[in-house]
Image 1 (cartoon, one colour):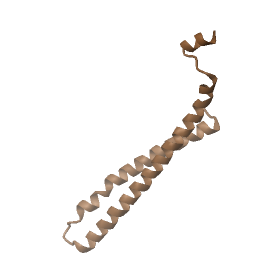
Image 2 (image 1 turned 90 degrees about the vertical axis):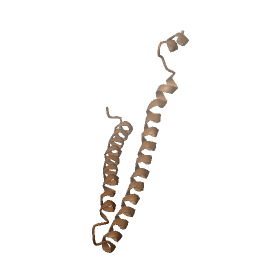
Image 3 (image 1 turned 30 degrees about the horizontal axis):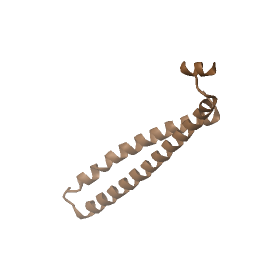
Length: 100
């Protein structure tokens, strides 16, 4: 009789038990990926900043403006990534501690 209920959306007890654990593991892997992306963007911003500073000291006639403007895209992505990271951390915290 229990096999019939499986046809109508019933799940096994093990699948229901593993669902929160899988959600926590998925959020942790997503958080790790976001942290790697943040480090990568920080390195790119530092490299672009170093290039812009070098060109400012050598090019006195304003040829360094593209190098100054380029890190702005990295900064936007960096802050958007931080916002997403905070949301994922909050979801993970609520899942781990059992809040709804």
